[in-house]
Image (cartoon, rainbow, N blue to C red; front, side, top):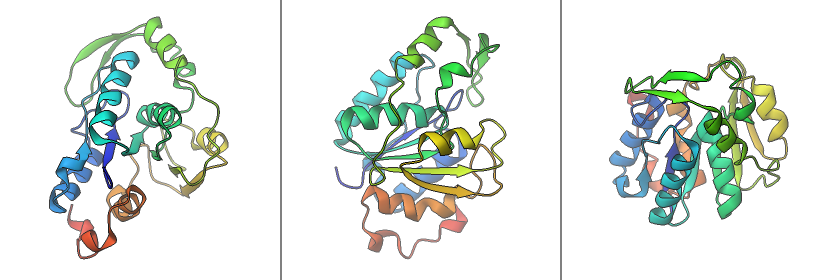
Length: 202
């Protein structure tokens, strides 16, 4: 489906995150809600990937928009299915970042408690792919003051892709809504549909 978007949230996040809600609001105003999926992902990577495969099947060939851990998932799925991906402060090799984090976790939005196990980490490792080299299929949006992930890891890993690096910001990607026109264009949404939309009020 042309102009469709699959939004993939990050670790311990949910469809209630600010970016997800802003994207939903825009697609609703454009009358394109049926072209957007924002699944509440299971905490286990294997089940999350199964959910995302189902959403891709529903939408056809959506733009994958992945934030943080969602960027890692999006990269795996984009490589597997030949899809376009827009990555926002993406995690690179997250299975190497979980030392000391095993044990009880809590979702920031739903307050759901769950156990991060070695099996989660192994499942993440299984999703690792070689660094993408298609600048036409990948946009990578980074902010240098990301307090959770060192943006330079993504800058190196995605160096062959279309990089957009902003000074400052944070892990949530400050000013996300101002960049939504670029996202819609990358997804294939006709500019005439959103040219008159005031994104600043979202």
